[in-house]
Image (cartoon, rainbow, N blue to C red):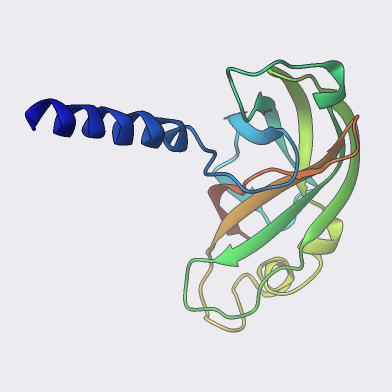
Length: 178
């Protein structure tokens, strides 16, 4: 009886193990795009300054199945990026999002580095709440002279085989001052 139970247990475990390898990611395609590194992030941004850039940002293209084969068709052509801003204080007026076209290729199981990537442009600087700091020296909604903002970026592209790919959001925090 113990032998039958042991064999049955082995059979159940043997059938369950392949299920453990199933992907948890359900996005389209066979690769994942991720932001792996930020270098040269500004902590404080002036409301009267020009466009603000990230010194260096690295994107990685990772095969979803690390045990499977790869091909050049899994390379990702980067097409655009989006930046959204969320206030960390009590203010409710958000800077408008930034959407920009960008070009580059991230090879499968490789990386691409972008230097000097703008994350704030003139449109964000000349729109409330940031424009209030430049015009009045304070936020007209909260009265504060500093606006803390979470900056969240996503990158969008397409594999050479035609699958649309979007990175997971990557965030950092800045303080905008007059």
